[in-house]
Image 1 (spheres, rainbow, N blue to C red):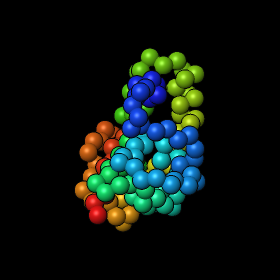
Image 2: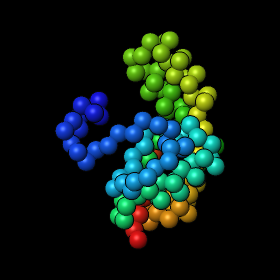
Image 3: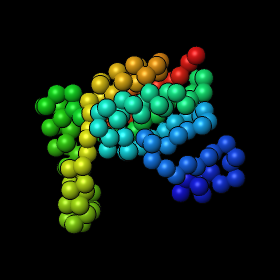
Image 4: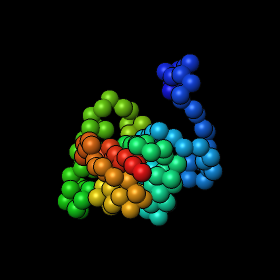
Length: 145
């Protein structure tokens, strides 16, 4: 879909690889991740944030839209209960819902505040959660030199 949307745009480059192992040789204006980083262990997330910072151009931005763990056990339970309510009333078949629940067993969510701290430690400034909806958050960081 992205290739169709940006067809003919020479500013968009596609790299199909494991981003945690790929040897990037260029600098980028923007790095965007969506619903991916929560599959990494905490140490791998921290390393990826540092790697992302290192391959951004001056004033480059990093955006991560991903699942996060609730700030407290109560908030985490509230977030997940609300999410399950939406999933179960979404019109998906029971089989699709059960498959989704099974996939969540592989998730390695981390707390939002911890991830924002890792972004700061990596060197990003203007670090923030620019959107949050229960256990889904959009994190932002900018690289200045």
